Length: 196
Image (cartoon, rainbow, N blue to C red):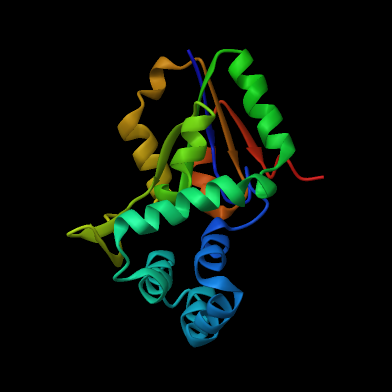
């Protein structure tokens, strides 16, 4: 058996989709206002004073806390239908189709929430391991449900869902330090493979 794991943001896409989803749902003015107000937290992240998860939850809380989950999902699906295709790297799609033809099972492994990836991954016949957002009574809290699916967590969740010893070939594709733990799982690893 053969399997391939693809990071999403920056590997399959040309942009960070969290930022693009915020722009799509809140408008550019709302996006930039929110970023200015939360700039100290972004600086703290760069200085490694707070974790990636803490910074992400700060942004999610500011922009989406209190949002009805159903309307949020509808907006995420609209983003997939109307905006995502322009951000997909052609080389990534070509590689996915090539691997499918060779009999690979293909899984997207992303730190971004599943809400704005699943419709696309399902349409392309891909598995998905992604960050989950917490909701209470179908309302977003602004928190992540569990652990942000980044860095070591990517490897943890892959191993929890797949017995890698059963696969003769494991291809891993990533573009940042948050993918290193996943990349070392591969019999072949590709770093920033679709950039020209």
